[in-house]
Image 1 (cartoon, one colour):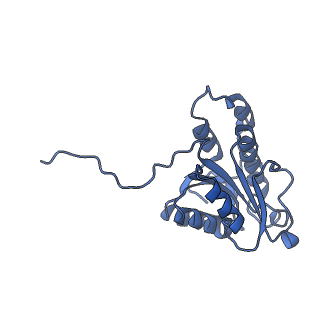
Image 2 (tube, helix red, strand yellow):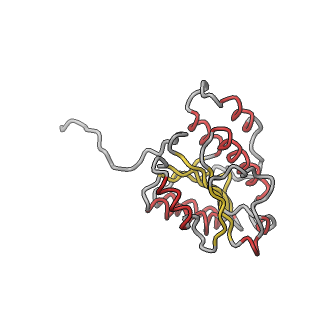
Image 3 (cartoon, one colour):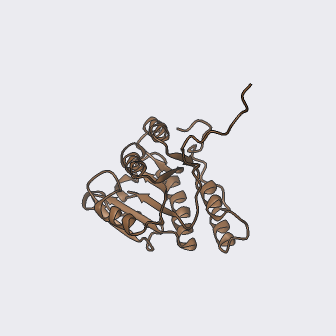
Length: 206
């Protein structure tokens, strides 16, 4: 019998780190407040993530889909520290401005992606970033769509293409890596309360 050997499939492991990750907040705008599944719960978790990015000095990229008609990012989400806050008409967040930022900041290797809508702008952003060689981590409890089926199949589609599905709390603990992290207590305060009981973290992604 041949000895077993480890096989390198070439697939990324999907680790996150503060020195090589950027946060992507996708189109959390006023017009979608009454149109997206569990918008309030998603906004709460998005705010935990953006607040943590501010504490840990992780770059935050924000986009707004045609804000003239759809409004701006909702005020309950901290985003005044964004390195980019750009309006767009294309669905993907990977606009010319975002591409320029990423080209100038070659240390960014991973994207933590969240917002709306999962089956449109989030999906197309994930595919563009994957195509450009970035690891993409989609935060399921901070991402939604107009209805549960669109959300569920969008996650499956992204996973098929190589994106990682994660939760806000898991991602933040992975970014810190150690309870001795200099910002551990500050981040812990942001996540000490349980996420909203919205069903967004059901055993079967919906």
